[in-house]
Length: 502
Image (cartoon, rainbow, N blue to C red):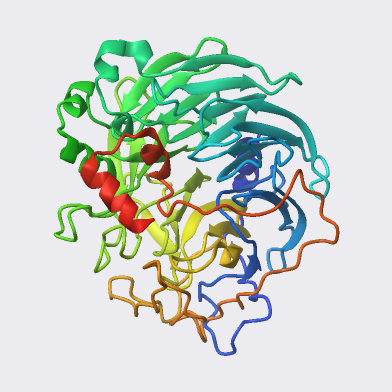
C-alpha cells in the first residue's frame, strides 16, 4: 500500500482528541495539558531529510554521510535500529557525500547524493523489509549531483542539475540494473528560450510524485506538473508560479545573484494533498541586500491545481521575519514539509516546526508551533501516525557541529508552547571561532523548564555495518543554494554572499 493511501485510511479514523504524551525523561511538573512540546529527541549526527514508512513505525533519515533507520513505534522513546555511513567508500571517488535525501515506498528505500558538489553521485536502492538490517540492492550512478529524489510506483525520480538542461530523470527501480527510462526538462518546451536563462534561475531543486503526477520545483522558473503514468514518456500538465524564460534571461549578473536568494520565486519544495487538488509550494529565501529589508524569508503557498492548466492561488502561510533576515542571521524561511489528511506539517529552520489545519486551503489555521531558535534548526516535518505524532529532523543550528543534529517526535495535536522564545528578537551571539563561524552555547536559552529533551545522542547499535569508511565532509551552510553555487548559476553578489556564509 502506498504510504499516502495508508495515511488517508488512517486519517479517516482519526480520533477527535488524543491525550498528550509525556516527554521522555524530561516532562516538568505543572505543565498545562495543552502544552505543545517535543515528546522525545534522539541524537542523530548529520540528520537532514526524514521520511516515515507506510505503517508509521519506522523513520528513515538521511544523515549526510549515509542513512539511518529509527523505530518510532513508541514516539516517546524512539530507538536507533541501523546506520549505514560511508556509502560506496570502496570507490575511488567515494564515499558518497552530502546525502541529504531519502525516499521510501513499501519495503524499498532510495538514498541519493551528493546534494551538491563532486564525487561519486547517484542513487542507491535498499531492501528495508527488516529496517534493522537494510540490504543494498543496486546503485544507479550519475554524472551529476542529486539534491533530492522520490520513489513512486517502482520508479526513482532524480533532480539532475547537470549544468545544462537540469532535467528530472526517471530510473526503473523494478530492475536490478536500475536503468534510466526517461528524462524531462524545460528544454523540452523551448530550448532556445530556457538555455538563455542562468543555471541558478532554473535549477531543479525538488521532485515529488503522487498518483502518477510529478511536481518539479524549478526554483525561479516555478513548479512544473508532469503526467508520469507512462514513465518512459513524461508529459506536461501545467505549471504554477515562477518567472518566464524571457524575464529571467533579462537579468544582469548582480540581479541574477539576488533573485536566486530573494523572493519572489524560489520554488524549493512541493507537496500535494490526498486527492491531488491542492498543491503546497514552499519558497526558500533570505535578505541578500545586507539587511536593508529588500528581501527576506519565504512562506508556503497553497494552490488549487484541480485543473493543472489553470492553477489558482488559494492562500499563503507567511513566515515570521527575524531582526536579521540575511543568510548570516536567523533563518525563518520555509523548508521541507508534508501535506496529508487536511494537515500541513512544516519545518522553518530556526523558527521551528508548525502544524496547520488546511482542510479549508483558502484559510489555513495554525494549530501548534514549537521553536528553539538558538538550539535547533529544523530541516523537515512529516506525519508519523495520524492523531498520534509527527517527526522532525533538526540539522543543528549554525555554529554547532552536525553531531548535535537529532530526530524529534512531536504530538499530532493542537497546543501552545510554554514561554515560546521570540525569533524576532536578536539572540546572543556565541563566541566566534578563528574562521568567523560561531560555536555552540550549550543549553539553548528558553528551553529550560519547557520540557525540552536533553541533547544527548543515543549510541549506535553494536557493530553496525557500513558500506565503507565513516566520516562526514564539510557541509555547505546554505542547503538550498549549494546546488546553485555548484552550477555556477549565481551572479557575483550571490557568490560573495554564500562565500561569506561558508
